[in-house]
Length: 127
Image (cartoon, rainbow, N blue to C red; front, side):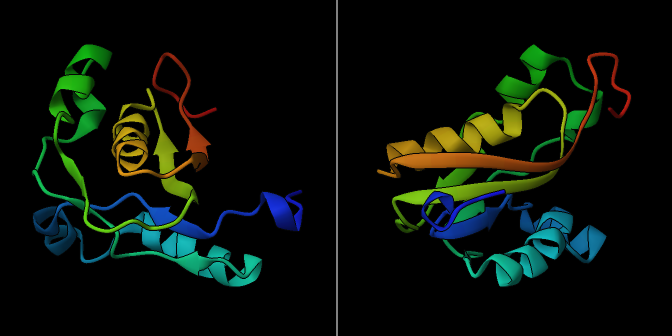
């Protein structure tokens, strides 16, 4: 349970590239973050981070390929807050979240928490 002082100033769902967003019709991280932000009283930030490079789906790539795949994939367009929570639906290797967190830290964010709904096991199955 998070105490008030441990809550982030905003929740940032991992952004999809606009092409993938069009294909899917929604961003599952946004759909999860929306009611969560409302319940916690945190600002939902959909504008500070963008995915500027379309990348192949991470699910079929090795750990090393995932890191290379995400190089320069995200851009921080404005300073979101000093303490943010990144939210994603599923974390496998953590490469996506790591790449975005790194960009946020480069932009001056002091604390980046990572929140995920599911974590896959080393063999790729859900935990």
